[in-house]
Length: 246
Image 1: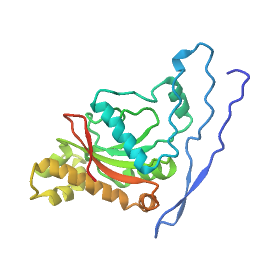
Image 2: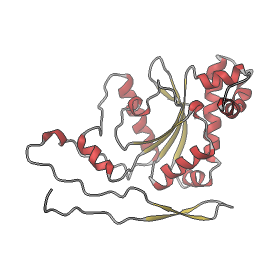
Image 3: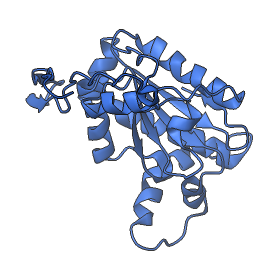
Image 4: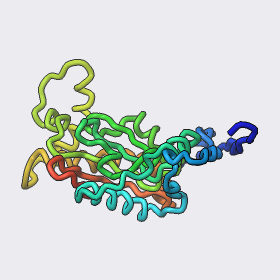
């Protein structure tokens, strides 16, 4: 409002202390939180419920929050939280997501929708085949250590085209082959299992990519100190249901 100063939070720096061979790196805290401007009298369009404070959630509670949101989505009880103008203005000043997701880029898996969450709630990395590349791992190191996400879920989904391509094999145009190469170990591991071959490979790929995330000394240390939980999830395109598989 005119004539009224805004409070600014002091920028902070956090020190990353990784495992053996990692050394010490300095990471700047991007996006400091700031005071939200007061509402104009009668401006009900931006009036909303206060945003959830996820700072003190445990990893188990953060996972349960995801599961509860997915249950609402499946049961047509969506609350559409944190999607107001007030929330938009709040998170414009900084983010504090309670969860991080490594998901397939498939257009049928809109992460915030299937977990019934809103602006600033989930830190999402999406890539075909939900593979954990070096850049994806780096992104989730930032999302967990710096931004404070308490649960990191790798999500595969039914009828995944990337995994199906890895099963069929063959020649692929452009860089698509790199996706198949990253998924192939999961396909090999799932061979000979009873049940649906594609579903088995999709779930094996989720487990494989979760293990690749844990190779990160940053992520593994957060898990070891019970500040983070890494899990796998399987999304059923037909029902909208997420099943925790690891």
